[in-house]
Length: 470
Figure 1 (tube, rainbow, N blue to C red):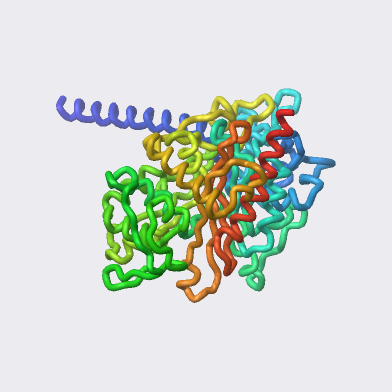
Figure 2 (spheres, rainbow, N blue to C red):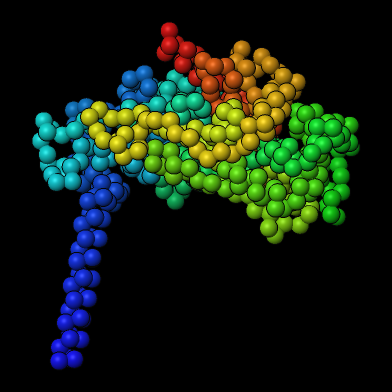
């Protein structure tokens, strides 16, 4: 009797395990079917039966970016637009994993869980995908970026979340993709990456935004303090250098002059814990989801840093890394009193359920990054930098708060080129735009490289948005 009872319990446990396993399989099959369909190794989508049946991808003004014509996938008529939006739209190869044609293939092809790709067209849902980007702004950014080795430019509406510009260099024409071999792979290194979403760079002085925030929130007399910059200072046995001897300054002047000495001293005074907590709160180590696409997280970790290295971390050197769209989100948070709106790229699709899936078109707040008073103070500092150091007419009449930076990691590796940055936002109510531009491969500073990209792209973005409203 005892043996029979034991066997009954064993059979009962096995039945329960089987039922749980079947339930898990069914749920995973139903919920994950479209994910499997979207994998690059699925020939049904990647081959002629996939993208050749895909719908139209359009920008915010209904300019066609990709469509199928006469059984062939074709792209925008303008070669510069095609190259500018390669990483957003994608190409036939599907090597750009974050592109719309890679991420949203099941929606573009009208895939059905029950019928797969065999559902008659008359019964399929809409297959067209509308994006938030503006082709003219992306083209302008591309033409400003294309002379450099690599880089990125992102602009988004910090009130609505719409991404207006997403341009990445290196690029190529999707109508004439290169054949990459061992002989030319160096030339095309990184060409499949959307640097806006998937790359990180040494921030240089744009990280002083973070150090300034930490100082404002943790040093009570920060606005009464003054510092003296003689061009170089020894900290913990090593030199911290500045571009020039700035003399005696308060915080606003130090931020405007981008003085390394002041921000190195502040980082040491604030200490590892405060600097780390502030960087974390401001999203430096965070990853964001942009229409379901995960961004690459930045990096701030001084847990093993010497005092000298901690000093340089406050200047945006040491091992600091940031992501372009991450910095645009941070600038949007400053503009919005500390709370960012998370950007999105996919506005919607005709007759699809993307909005119900949380992958399309709506503004959503992210976690609070700054106290409102701190955000207000940073806004004033960034505005002062534009007015007194970059020139208030730089952005063609836009009222802009910004910060430039020059990441010198490449120089420390024996290269004479830099990572040049400009990040910021416009305060004009009709064009609430935040931006981040990064340029690699120039011996010049961020203002004269990334600053000029940001200038051209922001002026065009503002004009495009204003024309939409007219």
